[in-house]
Image (cartoon, rainbow, N blue to C red; front, side, top):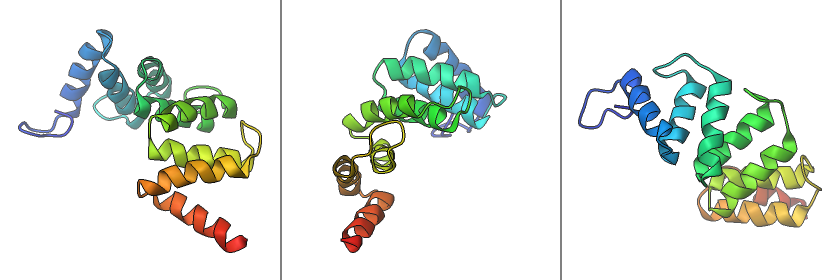
Length: 148
């Protein structure tokens, strides 16, 4: 229902089925339900509920949920702003190969937000993201190399 593959796209039905699976502990459904709450698709937008479901999936090791939970902490959306928690969750997702988390973790290291400033770690994570085709990471590496 969420993607409309083989069936008419219906965000409300997607939420219904994600909810059923999420309540049974399925991490991917929890993560997707969090996304639906975050975007307000098929259900009223509710950042606190998005955080709740992202947290459930993140604790089970879901990299995309970990990334999204980090965003919620960083932006103070549905939960108090906490750069250290953003770093914590992005680190977990980055270690699983999530390029978005790798890029953001690089920024946190580079700017010293939520973690001690460490340009070498920033470059390390940006290289990981750049190898996966992340344009932002490629740009940051070019800027750093151009400044030397």
